[in-house]
Length: 94
Image (cartoon, rainbow, N blue to C red; front, side, top):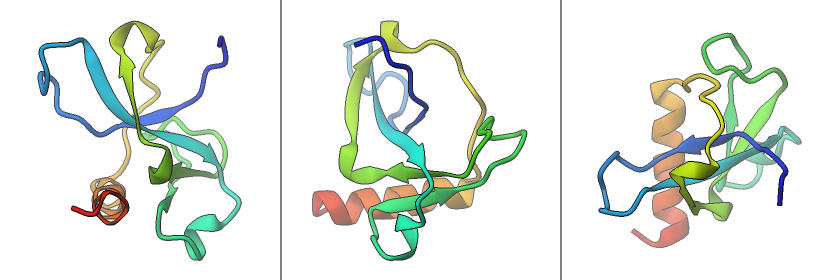
């Protein structure tokens, strides 16, 4: 698959000896975050690098090899990361 999609890296560097990062994919904002807890709305601004309204889909968490990463778009707000962590905790039963 050659399609490139943005994602939020939620793992700490060095969490494993393998060259992996755990990510939450980012998708188009369809206001799902207003009714489904596992979607988190993300700001569209220069800092995030997102150019259109977006949501993080914590139900689709994945591990990716570092070779699959193309470039860093930006960074999300700490409050958004906290919401993603909360949604992951609920989704994973933590």
